Image (tube, rainbow, N blue to C red; front, side, top):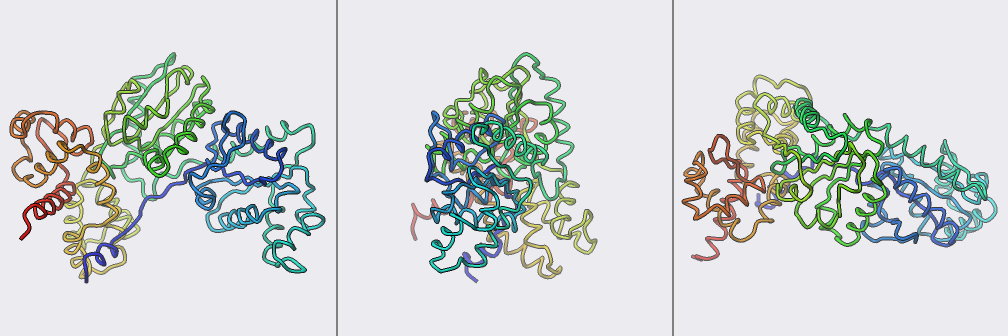
Length: 494
């Protein structure tokens, strides 16, 4: 078995999230319909709803962004609003959106909200009049395909639906926004399939928020820790717990990833979102996975946007950006304790809270190897679930040679952000971890010729000093040793 085959065999993806609250499907053919959609989009954003950035509200113009692509935008949204107009099916583009939306309604339990703008619902439902003629032309046959007719009928029959009345569009928009906001607000963010240890950490954060409470100002809290430690999971659980105390609340996920994929479009979308949502209201804003000073600077997050009593929470691996927004407290997410690790692993591997006794020795080995990192615990549980005890031993031996790729990819993100000097210090500590582990800060800085490299690693959550003793997570050591050996062999070819 080759190394690449082995790595792919143990590739898992235990965490997924939806990027948007709402996707709006509307015809591009008619300026009036576009204007209605633009006003609806703006009203949703003002209500704190995260609208898919396929549709951006910029200076009153209706702009179509190419930042994520239509299929990804639909799949990544919790609700789809279909604005049926006479022109809706004039383009095959809209019909493909409709098919995708109804597919997501069936496969992903996505909520669909039909809006009839200048067209009677019966015309859509019965594919009569203009709709019937367009359906026939789209299919290129004398009669439309039965499956397409069924899709259109199902969409038009969804209840509740909204019918706009000429001259009273704003009343319709208000009703639609209230309904969508209710749908979004009535659903808590998905936290985790097995939220072991989350409750106690959320209680810690609520206590911190109470201590630092600012009724007449804006409170900024940082949630900081190494990749895979559970920062996003904890932030979602905290959001669910406290969100109802605020006029506006917004959880913006995966900022760093989104900006890396398409920086300019994502920046414009996020800025609009924050500007329209906050508007001097008492707001809860969670910025998830902020990776650098530049990302936070470009988002233009300012205390002046928020009303008294607002809270901004930022999750990050890198402590440095937190100081740009005058952070009041930084909460470091620590690794799970042994009992929490065993319970989380048991849920993932055995689908119950307590493990089988016959696996006790191997479970101890998994927990010690993962060293309290939730991402690694979940990944191991997924890989080992359903296997017998003999297979466990084989898998564990292989994983030590060919680590689980998804875990390594998450951990490497912080390493890849280091500058040259910081990376050299990281590699030295990782490769010679037997010597550096437990060393005092003063001794480590003396050996490594100064504090700059150490401080950079500490900011990126790659090393910690607990009771003045240097510590690097074993999985980071493993990655560092692998990089060190590769770089050494490239300089000293045999």
